[in-house]
Length: 249
Image (tube, rainbow, N blue to C red; front, side, top):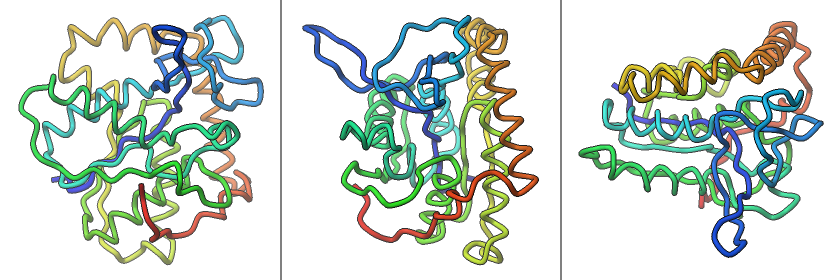
């Protein structure tokens, strides 16, 4: 049983549509990032040979999240639940939570009978000081679950991202805020969810993703991050997370 499903954010980018209009879209399976590792505001052509090409996965997360909603019928669903990242603040962009939530609602009617659920979004007007990253996002997810007494949590993200998400969740569960609160978390790999639901449809896509140079680059970067977490050297900025009980857009 899952009472709160959290679909992790993997970045949004501006893409050009009809008439030159730029709208916000979820990251594709592969994503060319900035040299400093940040998401690019404007989507760049995918180039697996580019050393800055990594795994995006925003679209995969939403597709997998839709499947999990149909399977587990959660009471509450959240997407990219946290303040805007720095690259979005700098251009006063939409919140990733808003863009992902809209994308989810657009695809759910095409996914068969959809059970009712509440959606909690984090609006672009709810920026907070300090970092906005994977650890803070997991913290805000658990904070919401605790405040709403939705203690059976599901978290879904692309496979290469999942081990770090699990470690951050473990850190939070051991903190004073969350220990002894009987929070139960189930973790899901987006690729596995989609392969189990429609293997003929998603096998070529998942195979291409896992065979890419971008995947190997991203896996190496995640491994370095995990090593830093385990050694306690991941980064002092992550200590800025705190429970937030204010208005969510």
